Image (cartoon, rainbow, N blue to C red; front, side, top):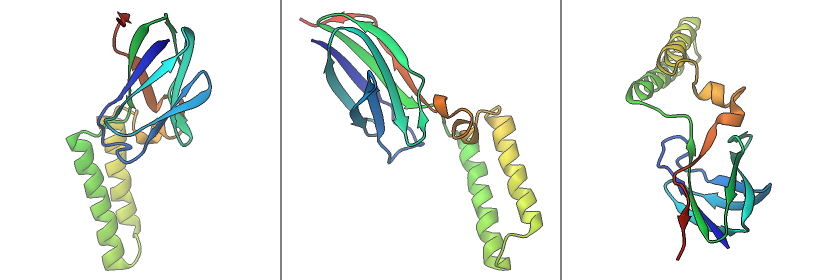
Amino acid sequence: MAKIIFKRTHQWANKFRNIDVDINGLKKLSIADGQEQHVEVEAGKIALSAKIDWTKSPVLELEIAENETKIIQLGCNVEFGLLEKILTGLSFAVLIISVYFFGEIPFKSWLVLLSLWLIRDLVITKGKSIFYYLSIGRDKYLYLKPLNERTKLP
């Protein structure tokens, strides 16, 4: 039997969500943040994919030999840097303050929120924000990346 080791990275996005892994179209694993799981598979061609709700990863096809171990890193393409977290926090602060003082979100507050999100999306993430990955880029939200070349088991 061949073996695949899945290592999920520690990430802020989807911290409390499990990522489901399909092997040859069948659900085999559900991996939590930072967790590592092993699965034995038949030797030959393997098609791997990962998903959370309506988002998923591109299919990773690999060839695995008998008694071989492959290590696959699993994660989300959305990363939140410090500046993104600050702008997101400011956006929510404007939203909460507007609702608290006005009972609704005035037009000027909407403009401030929209400006903060546009700066965040266009300048910082260069158009590849969470909105991209949750809409037209939903098939690229997650990634599966091989970490090693062939390692023979004893």
